[in-house]
Amino acid sequence: MIRDVKWKKNFVVLAILALAITFYMPTSEAQEDPYIENVIYSKGSEESSTIVLSGRDNATFYKYLILDDYSQAPTNWFESDFNDSSWSFGAAPFGDRSVSGVEPNLIWNTQGNSPYEDDVILVRHKFQLSGIVTSAQIDVAFATTVHHI
Image 1 (cartoon, rainbow, N blue to C red):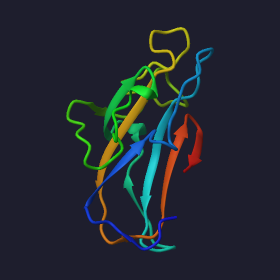
Image 2: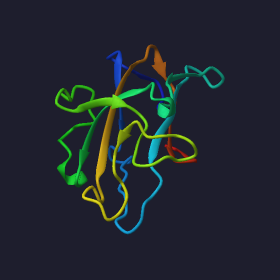
Image 3: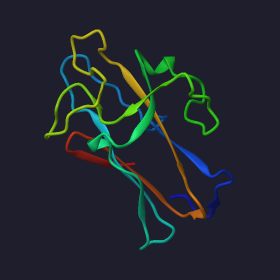
C-alpha cells in the first residue's frame, strides 16, 4: 500500500522481475511462463482503471532484456531514469510454447535442456499516472495462475 505519495514525475516504470518480482526457471523441467494480466490504477477504493492491458493479444509492448543470470542485471535497471535504449522492444506475451490457447509473440526459451536454461527476463514498460497514488496492485500471471504483488 502506498499512502499519500505524490509522484513528481509523470512517468513510472513498471519493472517486472525487480527485487521482489524476479522469475527464475528451473533447469529440470519446463514451467509455465509469466505474462502481465493487467495493471490497474485507482484514485480511490471504488474507482479504478486498467492502465496497462494484458499482453495476451500481442498489443502491449515492452522493453526487455534476456540474461543468463540475474547477477548480470544492470545496476538500477528498475529505476525510471534508467537508460534502456539498448534493450530489445517487442509485444508480449513472452514464452516458448502455447498455454491455454495463448501463443507467445516473443520467444523466451524457458524449457530445461536448452541453451537458454535458467534464463531471466527483465521487462520494462512506461505509463503515465496523474494525481496521488493511494494503492497499487500488479497482477503477474504464470499461464493460468495470477499472482497479486
